[in-house]
Image: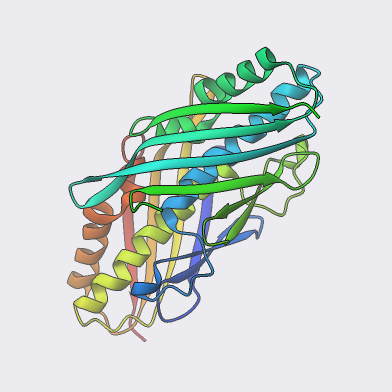
Amino acid sequence: MSDNITKISMERIDDHVNFQATNTTGNSILMDGSEAIGGKGNGVRPMETLLMGVAGCSSIDIVLILQKMKQDLLDIKVEVTATTIKVEDAKEYDTIHVHYDLYGPLKESKVEKAINLSLEKYCSVSKMLEAKSSITSSFKIHSK
Amino acid sequence: MSDNITKISMERIDDHVNFQATNTTGNSILMDGSEAIGGKGNGVRPMETLLMGVAGCSSIDIVLILQKMKQDLLDIKVEVTATTIKVEDAKEYDTIHVHYDLYGPLKESKVEKAINLSLEKYCSVSKMLEAKSSITSSFKIHSK
């Protein structure tokens, strides 16, 4: 497949609103609607996938940037909190806040630079979403 | 949690770029970077989650709208194909095409209306992404 084509497929896994989406290498995620409309409650909501994408995309960047900076990142955990507003008949995230907990003997200035480089420059997911959402970040270093 | 707050968390599952993201009801997805940078190849890519979100979000709408229209939808399968362009240092989807295969004795005009209502009006994920991407759709009805 061409480098600039991305493809996914999705199947319904019951008679209601429960779905399995799969990428071209065969890896899947489960998604569903709320239980009120027939969701089984074992998948993630479609709108949540966007926040997961921001967390994943930026963390990949941050891991790689800190490696290049010779920073010994032992672990990273992320929390994303978003607020929605109603825009006509849909809901959009108006704010997305990404908080990073980073573990290891890390220099604060390097961590700050890595996070900013990702969210402002390299992370394709945040670049996609920033048209509609104000994306902010915070971090805490756990040095031992 | 307030209705207009969405929250997800994410942990790293090894020393490289492999992550597990979890929603507030405990459902998870695996995400990773490419194998070249340390991905294990058992997760989805962060940018793929956006396309999965469009597929999931619009299919939930379509299932519910066709139910309201008394259309007997037996199954639905979706393929999403997107093209990326380089925008400065990131990649963005410039086009996203969503193809729906719908199974059952369905009226073409109703299916077309359901798809358009979702992508143009109700699907929050497509509303989020349409700022950067041109989103198009097609469908095929398999009536037996």
